[in-house]
Length: 253
Ligand code: TYD
Image (cartoon, rainbow, N blue to C red):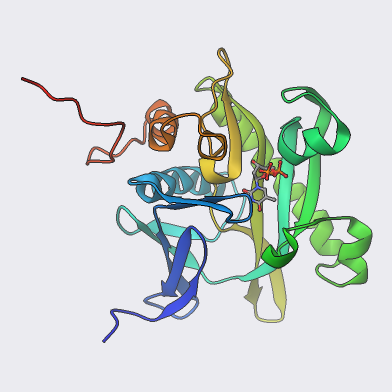
């Protein structure tokens, strides 16, 4: 018999039924995908690092009064979260030009934007998560005007927190993606940060050298992804003491 009921399996995480109604267990896999899953690999230790990094960011946000789905970390790969209804939009916040924005507007990667820009993409793998305007969101009722207002506020609060924390450890947050969940309290609902906040869904550049410390290392074959994520965890003081494979072992005679 299965240990517990599987609720959903995505590219990088699995959700299981939680111990209490309204809770889920979020399991971080080692699978890495990019370019809408055209590029795939299994990277030992990535899940454990993302679990710990996402815990760090979500806990910080909770402490500052920015609501998230995070309850507590259970072990190296799993965390207990509140069950939410996911808003079918990816919320992207950009401080520096990179990725699809750089391409779309012909900007050089690394160009500082005049102000943080919030974008929305429809969560639809078959369509490649297309960029959508507020007009589409309202017309197709993917979210209400109130939700949009709340999502902008949440996006900017996460950006200020993430950018500030990472600046403190010498890292620039070029852009990132968050997902938003709806939580019901009786007749009322409110929005919370859901999914994960980790180097899988951010662009993180070393402030001095510009070195990439995020999933672009995998997308662009720039070296060891776990070395990059472990460097972020080490700087934040959350690198797990137990074995997260980092680079290849060296033979000692
Ligand atoms: P973007 O530049 O639009 O796309 P790509 O990463 O394919 O070049 O992505 C902006 C940021 O949002 C980047 O840090 C990656 C993240 N992101 C995700 O994590 N998942 C997604 O589905 C999308 C669209 C973006």
